[in-house]
Image (cartoon, rainbow, N blue to C red; front, side, top):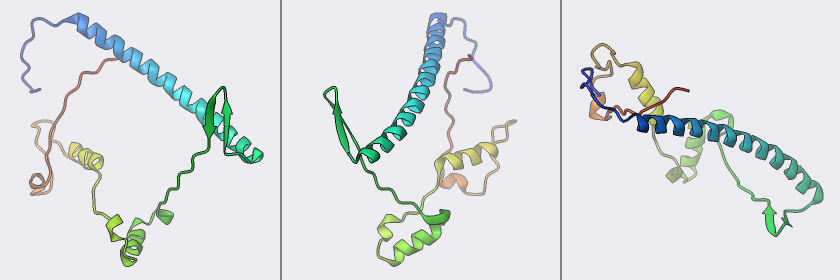
Length: 143
């Protein structure tokens, strides 16, 4: 959208009402889902303890199998990613190391450097030679 808005003479308010209803339904479903996830986490914690105490890794209840699934994850110690990367490179595991940046953080940086009066950006010279800046617009509804 631009600063100069084109005058709209007719808007289909039934679509706006439907959008509002869908957003309300979405908020309720997300709230319900958060509650379900919380309860599931509580049950899982309790059942992990019960499985350990019973010395089992699976059980079938009402014809459905419930089982332990092991996942192994690795992270750098004490948040020192640079040291971990150096270690990997020194031990022939450099193919696991890549240089990257966080697009969400860079986008926040760009938003912070927008001049709202004229829409320009106060960014380092050459920034746009390496990064594309674009705006997106979405329709939102209030509660």
